[in-house]
Amino acid sequence: MMETREPFPMCAHHLTRVLELRPVAGDEAAILGLKLVAMEPWRSLGFTAAGLERYFTRVDPGLNRYSVVWEGRLAGVVVVRYPWLRGAYLELLGLFAETQGRGMGQHIIAWLVSETSIGGANLWATVSASNHDARCFYEKQGFVPIGDIPNLVREGYTEILLRLPLQDGRTGQRRQN
Image (cartoon, rainbow, N blue to C red):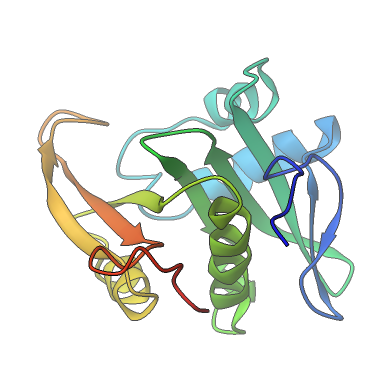
């Protein structure tokens, strides 16, 4: 039976016993901004804590922003735009350095695939060409590079557009997680 709900409802999503996504609260937006600007690629790309805080709180009906909570503590952020090119666009996935390497990213991508599959055929993302770890992560999740986008975020830097097709182009069948 097909689901009839819209993808990406703005409520808490329990991905595992210790991993939860919930709508970004106002007081969390400032913390997220401060933590991300101290990390790559946001530091090199010239983001500011205040700019990220505004991004996490501005009114934008197509943008869904979730705090990542690991074992009850703020651990990062997920921002997804839906709808976008017959699917969803993962605008930002940022996990704090001290919480990386615990499998959260894989659970988050699986959730994004599940939500996007309700009404879309693609999950999109971009990654900084210089961010080798993130590029490897997305490749392991099944994303394929579509093309380079020079100067998208900042002059002199290149982003790579990635696509995770959620349907087999030959059969039209949904991708299995």
